[in-house]
Image (tube, rainbow, N blue to C red; front, side, top):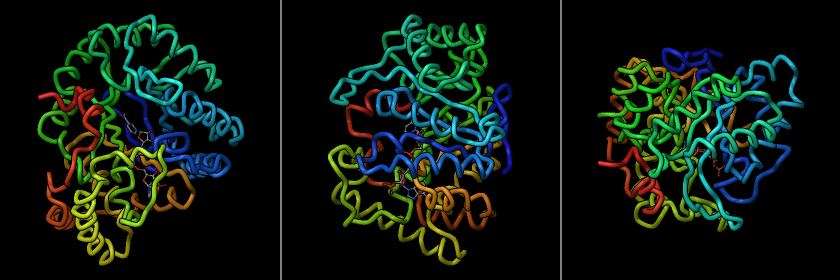
Amino acid sequence: MQNRQLGTTGPHVSAIGLGCMGMSAMYGTGVDRAESIATIHAALDAGVTLLDTGDFYGMGHNELLINEALRTAPAAHRERALTSVKFGALRGPDGAWVGHDGRPAAIKNFLAYSLQRLGTDHIDIYRIARLDPAVPIEETVGAIAEAVQAGYVRHIGLSEVGAETIRRAAAVAPISDLQIEYSLVARGIEDEILPVCRELGIGLTPYGVLSRGLISGHWNRERTTDAQDFRNRAPRFQGENLDRNLELVEALRKIADARGVSVAQIAIAWVLAQGVRRSTAIVPLVGSRRRDQLAEALGALDVTLDADDLAAIEEAVPADAAAGARYPEAQMAALDSEKK
Ligand SMILES: NC(=O)c1ccc[n+]([C@@H]2O[C@H](COP(=O)([O-])OP(=O)(O)OC[C@H]3O[C@@H](n4cnc5c(N)ncnc54)[C@H](OP(=O)(O)O)[C@@H]3O)[C@@H](O)[C@H]2O)c1
């Protein structure tokens, strides 16, 4: 497995990271715990070192799952695993999203619970999931920097924030990486946010590189989702938007078929290729929750795309071609990265 350093000050991590969210939350209830753990083990075995989670993914469920997977992994794999944890999202007992909390005292509390659930004495990268509009980013990052000083956290990350917030955060303490949605159908970061990351020496750990399964090549109109599935409400998965977006996937499939690879592999390889093209460490977090999905996703590392390939892919899926916003309206409003 190739490695990349996240930014100029961040950790060295595998070229692809594993996002564990879907093993506990967001994509419906039909998740197999044993298969989730086997998937984490398979990822570690393949050389994946970066495991991403959030304390609010299943209200602690995801951190406890990672704890179990690491405890039952071979020692050598466990020792090289790095945890990236998001905090700050507030949930109700019914799962409702009820705000964000980036106050220093709250961060101490979130961190104490995460360390306990993960069964570790430190977190490798710690970040607030969404900017708390009531707390200046300087205070939030300053509180994480204190946790770094105290040895509880190794690196500071950011999530879904815009260029100005990135600059303000980086003025307080070194930032390893920005986590943000980036894919063939979510390219809004290319004009301003990506250049700021490059300028400040901040890496990128994009999520949604398969647009939550939409551009995996495995989604279709007949796919049913349960009430707990985010895709039930996600604009890109609805009605005419879905029809339009699946047309883009079919255009991509022609390119994948000609290369003898899968649509998901082309989509992930395109994101990987942006790292070279844009001189930034870009480490996609793939949301595989089964071993077959993981094997497919890691296969993207063997797909090299030259300038002609990239041009053909971008002709098949032009920037801004996707129909529908990437989040429902209320969640879009919470994204500092989307503020104009
Ligand atoms: N910072 C943030 O705001 C934020 C937001 C969201 C996620 N994240 C992080 O980023 C990670 C990745 O995000 P994501 O899960 O939304 O991204 P994703 O990789 O675009 O979507 C994952 C979904 O795609 C489908 N899929 C089909 N084939 C796949 C394959 N070969 N490999 C992987 N998935 C395949 C699966 O759905 P089915 O199993 O239903 O087919 C899977 O649940 C998350 O796990 C989380 O750690 C961060």
